[in-house]
Image 1: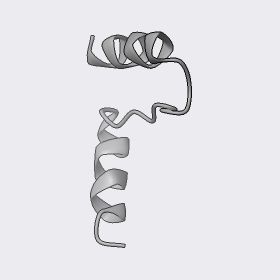
Image 2 (image 1 turned 90 degrees about the vertical axis):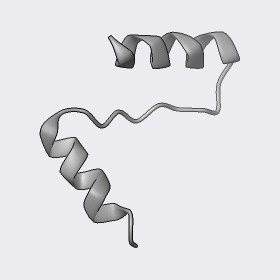
Image 3 (image 1 turned 90 degrees about the horizontal axis):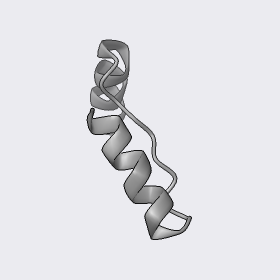
Image 4 (image 1 turned 180 degrees about the vertical axis):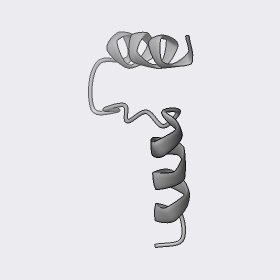
Length: 37
């Protein structure tokens, strides 16, 4: 409830990334590193 407006603000700036954490750690790590580039 409190973080939703902040998440939307970051999403509009193009710097909010959703990463599925319910997968193999190697896939999650790859997604995180890709999002940070």
